Amino acid sequence: MAGSSRALFLLTFLLFSFSEATEILVGGKPNAWKLPSSQSQSLNQWAETSRFRVGDTLAWSYEEGKDSVLKVGKEDYEACNTQNPEQRFEDGNTKVELHKPGPFYFISGAKGHCEQGQKLVVVVVTPRRRFVSFSPAPSPTEIEGPAVAPSSGAASFNVGFLAAAVGILGLGVGFL
Image (cartoon, rainbow, N blue to C red):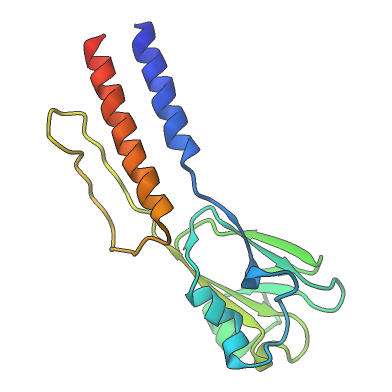
């Protein structure tokens, strides 16, 4: 009985230790929340090359009192409407958790900045759902959402390591 409790604790620990939520600095550098000097300097160009997951936190660094970050809906994003934001941040060090999959829209609250390109849309990917079976099948059953290319080999390593750990634990529990 004690062995299976230890195995369950270890499995729970492993599952939670592979959480990949991260704090992401908008634009990849401090003070990137500013008017873009060109289309290639647009924060949307940066966002298109980044991967955002549920639980990640976006962090903005900007000069307090001279700018702000407004979280808005799609229509207000497209129209650069600053009048009724869902959320308004003015502290110079804004952090917003990406709590669900789908698009998040942000615009500058400084007059005229959105119209000049100071805005950002990030799309949070749908988390993959994995169902692991402890049956004597040769490999775990896996059901996934839409295919998404991994951002690095680290994600593949984490999943592979987790599958191996679950397999070893399953064998260990079977011998108890």
